[in-house]
Length: 468
Image (cartoon, rainbow, N blue to C red; front, side, top):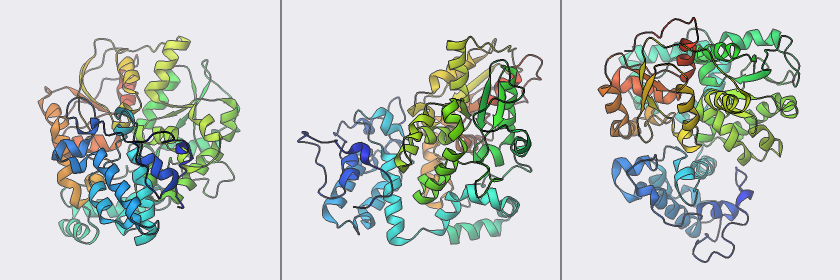
């Protein structure tokens, strides 16, 4: 069976294991499916994230275990060419939000996110890629090549009931919520870095006392929330680092298009596109891998995709080396505090209380511990973590007409009620781009990235704007 992703890591899975039930077809991909040992942790509804779709339906058919059973049946019953067109898979995967919780919380570490990516890629090969999938998955290209047109189209759609209804009817983009609009201007630091960036693998000319770091500004921070990237630069420079903005290799075919992790392509099954973005990243950082320069990201799903899912694209050993240098902002700051004596001169903020929502990937990769540590540095600051599953937005999932209700049901389990119940003046902290938009849509309150909070807490900074 020809696969789109590299499943060689599962080569020895199931050897000597009489009850794994590896399907007869599917090779190593089938072994990845068969790691499920029916512990049924995916059918818990207590603490944890897994499994969002089971939590809202109470139906075992929408659990990780049932999805595994559907894949086993399809791979056993169908030839390689048709197995992925099996309607049982469409039904089983319909409400999967690729939250990564099963890889963390399942004792067998079932990676349903990657299993789903392969399934979608195979399905696209059989049936073609739907237009809506191309639109949502292609955000890096749309924003990088046609930013002005995209912003105009989204603003027109959001302001016109007619266009909103047409998009719902013709494309299946729900008319019940706005589409996030790109900011008036993208992150200015990217263009400035074209002039200021030193050769790869070398220190910046005016390196801070703590040395150089590279800020990987993802597609969403670059085009939709540039103030998050600007705040991160301020925080890192205040901490004593010389900040370089990640740019493509000079020989890149699109040197003026920002780097992208390829996450939107992976989650929509457009693996070849994702591989192309990953190659751009590896080429851009080839000198930095040797120099071991820390590379810092801001969007959890983007940075952690680079660290976890790049290996599945079969791009060589450099992927593992790069992964050792990748940190979310709070991970990096926490590490430097613990190991290298970093101390930030922070002051109390104007709004000293907050509710904190962790992105699914922050939870799946254990980043929340670092988030809690960094928030603890702010004097007189208190916060409450919302023990919640997925916010329900999950990238494009919440924008899909047939999934809007499920999206809101996931959010209403705990997240949105907790935000609504927070007293006036309480900040809402959420690092995920999708999470912030789900919170604003469901409560009218604006959630903020931790980089903005830390910038506000820097000595001499002005207080945070009033929460809505």
